[in-house]
Image (cartoon, rainbow, N blue to C red; front, top):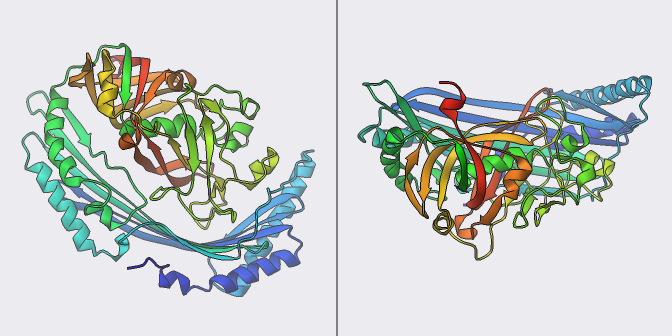
Length: 507
């Protein structure tokens, strides 16, 4: 069945509201105006030991008008779905811009908001790549599948508890601007997750193991066979959990690491994804875990990592969580290089930061997480490229005499400049003379961003590549949340500092 835009969204007075708002903004002298009407539906289901323990289904609908007037931004949002209401919101946005201009002038700043040029695209429609909209699936079917998965794990020896969760989002956006771009878009994403916990009744010690399946820009089919082998993952979890419970604690020191995509995606997110957001590099985003060591003056010269390091920003990859047709400034999305042969060569931009820095155009990274929020420069799908014809994970492991194979993401810590970091994981396997030799516990790897990526000696081939990601990337004040994917192969790093988390914490 072909995918179509939700009829209930299309039944809203999209174009009339936009026309009223944009006409009012023009009449009040706005140099640029854009209108964005959104409906975001989010649902979650939670089971504890195969019994329902929580459910939520919320929908947020509203619209926003953003203007550039007199060299300043203005923004306002509303929910009154009438032409008069939309015109009033546009007038409020212009009033905000006028007030901002006065404040800026009083502060002695001559900076004016200017936007990088972007062609007008006329009327366009885009729908993300999925087969079955999860919101078309009865809640009873969702609960039944999560229950069946939970019961499988609970039936296994050594599994004491199981938590099962499913998140689903359908995001609809209508956008129109004074240049003539009009877009109607729909994207769907899901995140299934199960966590099995073992408890030693004698000692009281416990540990857990989480599924590795990443969130994805897919539909219900992701849970029923397309894109992930759930049967294989669930079947292997009890034995892996038992081995984790029995594993010895790691000895701190320096080790070679083979890092699985299920862990490496998060390191990419924190140390590359955020660090190459241009607003951070320019100092405009500094309040909430802001700024970056990869400052703009280092573009083209910063040795980010080893010569085999190639990283792209991409808002077009199929099933990516940050994939969209046009961003929230009417920019057609694209793919571009961030790091090439280990050197910083690009940033993620919106139209303002692109113009400030002399780029010809934005690469489509403006996004707002709700109709009440102003678009920010947000992260694309930032991915480490595999090596064509490169090794598989077993070959990477075979090249290590003494090391650790890291699987699954855990906790993390990184400074505001995205330079000094520490990451844990879900599963750690000792490598001895090129072979896996049982699990370890209490492992964290620590480095600076450039030292870590500089120690990367080999990347796996396309057969090791996995598109991981997160539903919950936070940025800005007031805070906004965005979903983003990060693809990567397995990779080999030499001589990385390993900490014992239990001993480091003094426990």
